[in-house]
Structures are given as C-alpha cells and as structure tokens.
Image 1 (cartoon, rainbow, N blue to C red):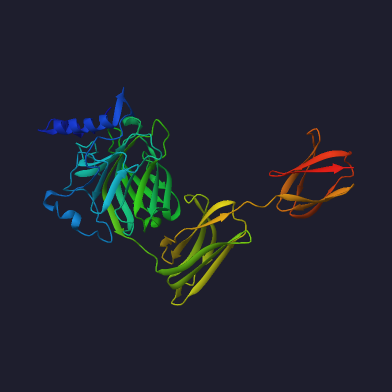
Image 2: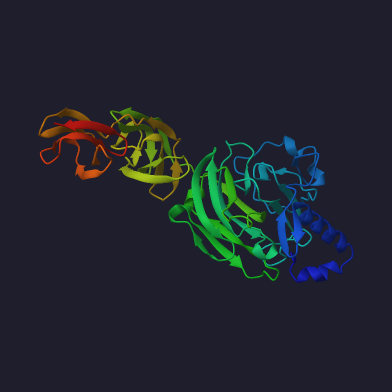
Length: 429
C-alpha cells in the first residue's frame, strides 16, 4: 500500500522524517488492518483520554477557549496548529471536526508526514478525518460549535484516499445543514473526476488536481448559492461495502458571512382543510424578495417543489400569503418555504409538519338489486369481481362519484367486489 507521493521518498531521507513516517503508518494500520494491498475494517479509533480536544498555538493555550466565537468562523488553513494524537473530535476556532458523530479519529498534521499530498493544492498543515466503515451513514463533517453561528461555505481544498489506497470511498453525498435541517445536497460526487456536481444553486464545482502519483484524489471545491446560510457541512459515503472506509483531508476552508434574506417572516402554519393541506404565512416587511417556493417532503430530507408564489418585492407592511395542496400524501408531510430575492440569494423557512390520516375507503356499497349494484366511488379505482370459487369474472375502472354495476349477465350466486384496500360481497338472485 502506497500512501505518499514520490516526493515523500526524498523527505524520508531527511533528518527526523522517519519518525513522521512511523507515525503515519501507526495511524493507518490502527484504523485499518492490512491484507495484501487492501485495507480491511479494523478498530474504529486510537484510544485517547481526551475525546474532544481544543487545540491552539502554544502562545494561545489557556486564553483561546475564552474568546467569544465570531459571527462568521475564521478562514482556516491550520497553520500553527498540530494534533497528531488523533482524538475523536477536534474543536478549532469555533468549528467542530468529527467523523460519524465522533466515532472515528481526527488530527492536524503537516502535509507529508500526515499522508497528505505535497502537491500544489495542499501546503503546510491540513486536517485529516478517518474512520473504518461499519456505522451507517459513515461521514466526515465540520460544523459551528453553536447553531446560532451560520456561515456561507465558499470554498475549500480537499483530498481523499480511494480504492487504490485500500477500500476507501470514492463516491460521496455532500450535505449542508442549518440547525439540523438539510438546506443543500449534492449526490454522487466522484472524487476522481473534475466537474459540476448537483444542480441549480446547490451545485458544487470540483477542480481535481492531477498531482496524484500515489492514487490520492486532491482538488478544490467551490460552493453554490444554496450554501450561503449553513452551520454544518457533511461528506457522506455513498460507496457500498467494502469501499465504505473514510479518509478525508481538508485545508484552506473559506468561510464568508452568511447571507440572510431581508424578509421578516411570521405566522407560517400548515393545517388540514377537509383533507387538503392549507399553508399560510405572513411577512412583516420585504426588501427585494422575488418569490416563495413551497416545498414538500415525506421524510424531511428529500424535497420537491409544489408551487412558486410571487412575493410583494418591497414592502414595509404586513402581507398575507397562502397555498392549498389538494391531495397531500397519506402519512407525515413536511413543508417549508424557499425564499429567493432578486439577486438570486436564497434561504429556507422553518419546517412545518402535517399528518394526513388514511381514513378514506376507495369505494362503498350503497345498494343491490336483482339487476344492478349501486356504488359510491371515493377515488379513481379499478374494481375486480370474483365468483364464489375465486375466479375473476370482470375487472373495470370507475371514476369518483355514484356509479352503477350491471348484474344482468351474472349467474345467480355469491360474488366479491375487490379494490386495493377493500372487499365487499353481493348476492345475485
């Protein structure tokens, strides 16, 4: 298994560099056992008595943790910081770095000794997050130490071990959160290929660097407009086992002030109106707001657009808005508003939940005579008629409303009328 670029061989000849190499291999082998040239799942982390460490230059220790966190996290290139004991999490400059909820290991090392590329993108120290697969989902993430501190994720440099360095993931989903809610998602990000991943304002541009002599994948990510107001960024493995081990290094994180749309939203509610979902919201003021996109989800993660509602644009008085979803799906429905201004900046409202019960029968039997059967059809349905021996006699579609089933051509006896959720019996005399 080769984890260094060719330049690392030159470094190994320098005084003291063998200790760095020993440290790296100790770390890698502690995370994954070696079988031939492949990495196999091993212990999840190196034992450490301080699972959540705050690190700072020696000159700042003691005073560092007392400084209040800024409204926007400071850009980070990890210069002057080192923690090669690899604890479960690291807190640095009001940002928390971890893997899979603190079950892996995280460290800050110099580029060559830490197994990181010494190519054009990376220089000096970088932060490494590693974890052997087994917990789902497996991810590396960084987030503000307080969910009241949001930021615009502008860009960062990143490196991944891949299949050639063992069974490490090469496909990721990149997710942005605000207070635990998903606000931006890019699926099927391939660390081996440059390109634009995702669509619209959630898209991320990946410029992969070709300086990867040992099979590492290094490059820069630039984030779209939907990443303008987040407090957490997560790299979630999308590769299947055995390629579900994690090795991610980040450097040169560029945080910019969060963009919050100039709109004061109040009284956002969702209610059940005779089986329909009624959304109402009110703005107390608007400055340059173009529209509201009503979005719906059945799991709180995967969202789709329902309708675009034009906004007032500019207003200093109360404005009332509403939207009616005629046929919400049965179960738990999640709703939110995507606010967009005239410059293309976007932001989400809080999420509202509506539970829709499935109490409607597809049809009901109203009456039966010698010649016909009267039915109340509650939704478009296909009815199947079976005789007493279970043989299908007829299948027919009905639209909602009062409908009639002709029985003149049926032999006398017992019959069953079935839909997807209901069976009724009739007797033809």
